[in-house]
Length: 291
Image 1: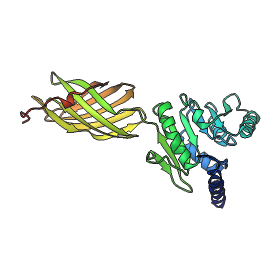
Image 2: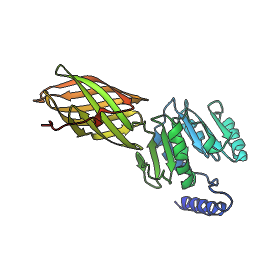
Image 3: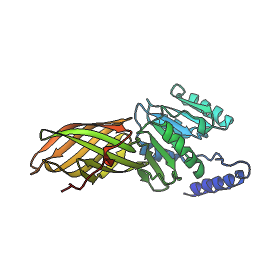
C-alpha cells in the first residue's frame, strides 16, 4: 500500500506541474503490477480479445494480458516515443511481438474499432475527455478497465475495491429513440410504439398499444443485450404480461418475447423484432375512449 501512495503522490505532483505547460497531460507513472492483474481479471480475458491500452507507458498492461492469455492480441499507444521503443523491445524479449505492438500515437488518435478491451490509467480529466471517443468508436460490449480513476457520470458496471479500486464498464449499444414492433397475440396483430431514453447503460422507456400507454419496467442494457418487462392491457385480449429479451443490431433489436395471457396459466414464446423509426405512433391522438 505504501508503494501505491508513493506512486499516487508522484502522479499528482507531476500532473499539477504539467498543467501550466498544456491543458491536459498525463505523466507516466507505472501501474502497480497487482492492480494490473486485478484489472485484467475483472475484464475476464478471452481468446479472441483485442486489448488496447491508451497511454501504455512501459507496456505492462498489454504485455501482462498477453501472458495471461496465449491467444489474444493487443496494442498500446503512447505519446512518449522512448517508452514505445522500450515496450516493443520488451514484447520481443517476452516472445509476444507477433501478437502485441506499441505505437507512437496520441491516445485521441488511436483506432478503437477492433478493440474488445480498453485499459486506461490517465489523469481523471483525460479519461473523461476520451469517453466520447470510446463511445463513438468502440463496439457495444467492449469492456473498459481503469485503475483508481473513474469515468465521471458514467457509472461502472463492476468494481473491485480492495486494496485499491479497479473498475469495469461495458460499452452500451445505442437504443435511444422511437421503436416499433408487432406481435401476434391470441390471433390478433398487436402494434407497439415505444420510446426509449438513454444515459450510458441506464435506459428508461414508455410504450403504447391501441390507446393505452405504460412504462417499461426493469430495463437492463449490457453491451448489445437488452431486456425489459411490460404489463399492459390489450384490447379484446386482457391484461398481458410481457418479458422481452434481445440483441441490438444497429437499427433493429432481434430476440424473443415471453407473453403470458389471462388467466396467466400459459406463457407463449414469440419472435420479437423491433425497428428504430423516425416518428412514433406513441404521439398520435388518443381520444377519450380509454376505458
